[in-house]
Image (cartoon, rainbow, N blue to C red):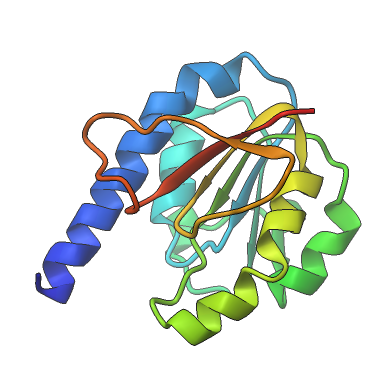
Length: 160
């Protein structure tokens, strides 16, 4: 599969998952957390789906289109592992984490802290959608929409 086809499938999976969980997230209180703003495509999609919800985006640097960049009070720049620490316990309804690199050794380092971080940011019964598989005792894997190939993206609910 070409890298272009892989990217397209990943983006389709991401969109389909976010649309699939939209109603469940709307039933929960709390902000939406976007780990990895990138160029702002997913942030823009989340903003459309949750127009009344606070969405806080984290990234190492601003690389988003101006129209897809959060207001300064909802944009946190720096190393995600470090900058999220002051938000632990925020009781997010949704954490979206698309911070995988595609390099197994780099993603293995991220996976030493991302599962704990996602669980600590979520409210009880909050949902996390991730491009990386998150193994954590407080995260229960949820079924994917039929359009998403297993292993392409991952979906969890915090159990407590």
